[in-house]
Image (cartoon, rainbow, N blue to C red; front, side):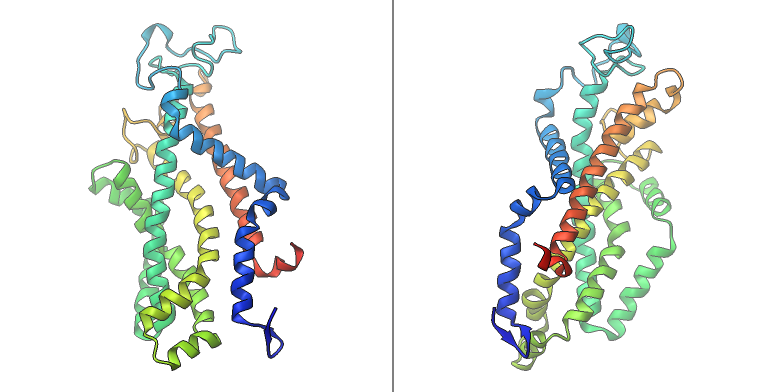
Length: 304
């Protein structure tokens, strides 16, 4: 690898980053926790895409003759409803399958909204500094001063509930986290030699940010976004549990928790299985995110 003043050259750094990207499958196979997280997430994605094919019943189908039927392994259960039914006779297993789609959609797209807003704000704040930095940081301080769930509840009571509304609300209430993270990265990157050289030869600020700053922020952004999907799924479940998120008859795991909370003592399966689905999904995303963080961390490059 070429070196300059005893340090790796920029071309060497680019080649190293590319080698890490192409080496990700091998590194994933060597990590048991990362592989478990990847398989869990892959299963949830597969289920959400092919939910209509996999589910044995229509999720909204009411069957008053099979109300509160227990899971198949308990007395009174049947193979027709392997995880039992809710208080209206709707199949729990089918509702969990279709609910995965809503939870993943909200989790992924809300992170995209928050990541876009936060990245733009963070890059502008870190690169230009001065009054722009002060204004943006005071805005993020104002958002941090208000509890996220409370702010989301206030916005949701004003706007019409739905998937798009929930994506928007979670996105606009969580972007300050990205802004602070990206700003801290940019503050270190803007003083690098290659950025100074680009500025010296007359490269415009927007071009420097797009070509030299953003690509170097991307690894940290990917790790943060992966972990944030888990947080967004939990926020969606919490708001839907409170009746402010996804509205019936649309199904999400949070809605199922809300429907089953009053029957935990007598019909435990109504809320337990959606809760397990949320926990397993979040666990898988966290395991994969932690693995990505370790792989993309420059301190661990010598261990590969």
